[in-house]
Image (cartoon, rainbow, N blue to C red; front, top):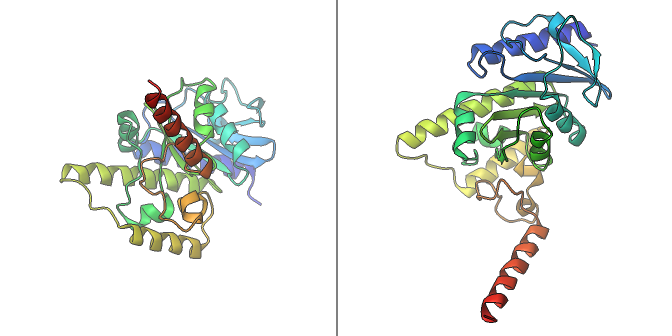
Length: 266
């Protein structure tokens, strides 16, 4: 079993990686790891993620209350966002929040990362929606993120950054790294005239490969309502910010009917 000290060292290593790769500036970003049902290790506020040592790392409970912290170190105010992920996703063991340049640029522009442009991104990430803007350190961000957690393993934060989570610290970091790489490729492909997207058939074959690999997490290959009904997956359907369900379809029909009747009665 890995000791808490070793996990703290791993958090510091991942912090240095995201700092060295330019995914955070100054004291931005935060990382957490679940070590038991009510114990979590997390990075402190006001500290550069590129220069941490194990004694910097704090321990909190499931409510974000401090269990242990050295000196003047205290948990990031964004720990609320992490706790919401753990609460809604029991399979998640680690959360990474950063401000990678390309992914954050898409978040600022209001463009979700949904275009199927390369096999690895389709298999590993699926779609990456944008959670509505929330004021940092408040409950607005956890509330905005919550509705996407059952469907996706990474989320862009409007005008803020990106959030990735998985069943291990390294896997959560890799999702963040893949997310940024995907965003950079998409940005550059658009400058070259626009990406040539994979076809629906090609996407479905990649989804089948993912299912054969038995990859963990949430992904359109497993949770897309359309896909489960034998229809074409919702990948890049334009509704990634509102996960598609049968209920949402009926609500839409009802709303359209209401508007048509209202116009006829005028």
